[in-house]
Length: 249
Image (tube, rainbow, N blue to C red; front, side, top):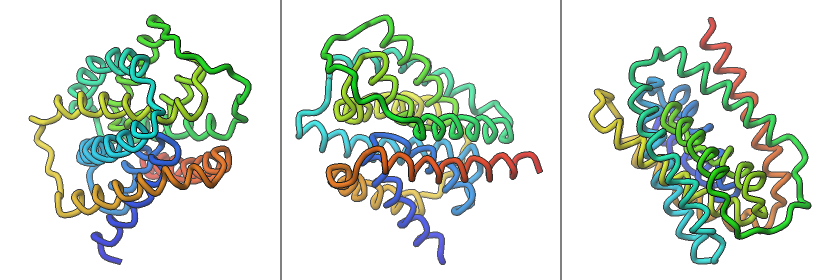
């Protein structure tokens, strides 16, 4: 199977994940770029941010049209993460590739474990913004985005549910705003880094990811969220274990 076909298939899977779950796509994008398409970890994290930014903006538009995005709370959360994302993005270019790989794998494992936990469906709906809690969670998420090249949606969604008491549908939609802002901030600091990117693969990857994001939004309405999360979590655990084994051998 050629690299181009792999990029097209992987992009579709990433888009479906983002559209359906509001996150999680970036933790698949990085290992896909490294192990299937031959990118270095440094190039993969930068390319992942480009892919995730384009895809999340597309998915955000779709969710915004449906009126599901909580703009005020999302803006507070996202604003707090912009500077940490930029600073961490600059710092990541100086870290050894093995460190980035292990840190990414550890993050993926934590995300998978969280997704396998039973969801709390009894939380009340809230439009209130809790600036202190939102800013703290946003700053932590921004740091993760900049350092590891992940959009952070797999952490933004549970943070919005637990910190701001959002219902799941609003959390998924609003997380796309946060992902977009953090990814753009991190990309801005990486623009001058000497990283070679293969646009012949990134371009098709983005194209099918955008198409997949629209399908993922429709899929979310047909398949239960918990079932989607469990399937994704199992895949994510397998990928993380493989990355750890590869980094230490």
